[in-house]
Length: 317
Image (cartoon, rainbow, N blue to C red):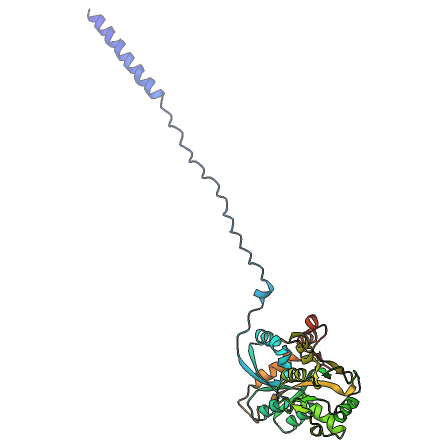
C-alpha cells in the first residue's frame, strides 16, 4: 500500500515535470507587427487656369478723350448754312476733347471779332482780307483748308446760262434786272463788289439792285421771292436747293468762270496780342482740320445727299 502511494506520487511528479517542459518549449511567437497603411499618393493640385482677358473691341480699345474746354470760332455763314460745322464739331470733340462753338457771320464781321479778341480762331473766305489780318498782327498764320466756287443763280429768262461772269453783270446793269446782294461785307459780298469794281460799274445806279444784309441762305430765299439774280457759293446753293422748306425756283445762270474760286482759310488769333485766347485749342483745330483724315471727310461731305461734294479739300496743296 505504501509502495502504491510512492508510485502514484512519482507518476504525478513526472507528469507535472513534462507539462512544465512542454510549456517552455512551445513559446508563443509574437504577432507580426501591422504594416501601416500607405497613404494614397497625393496628386499635385493643378494650378487653376488663368481666365483669358476678353478681347477689346475697337471702341473699348480707344479710351474716350477727356473733355478739355471750349474753342470759340468766328466763321462765314456758308460753313454753317451747309451743315459742315454741325457735321465736323462732334468728331472734333470726340477726337480732341475740345468743344467747338461758333458764330456764323460775314467774313468781314468774323475778322472783326478776331481783331477784338472775341474768338480764338477764324474760318473765312476772303484771302486778301485774311492776309491783311495776319500782317496787322491779329492772326498768327493763315492756312488754306478747302474751296468751292461762286455761281450766279436767277431766273432762266431773259438771261441765258453762261460762263462769262463779266458779260452777265453788264447785262444785269444795263437792263436793270433785279439783283440781291448780301451787302454785309462777307466774303461773297466782297467777291461781288470786286466784280462790279473791275467792270467800273456802280450797281447802286440800278434801281433794282437790293441788299439783304443777311447770310447766304436768307439772301437766296429773298432772291427767290423776288425772282432775282444773286451771287452765292455753290455749297450753300446745293443745300438750299435740296433742303429748303419752300422749293427754290431759281437755277444756276453762271458757273465755271476761272475767277470764281472760293477759297477758305483758317487763322488762330494772336496770343501775343490777346493772351487770354485759347491758342492751344486753336492750334489743335488747325492741325486737325488740315489732317488727311479730316480733309477726306470734307471731300466726301454732301456727296451722298446732293450728288457732289459741297467743298473740295486742299490743305495739303
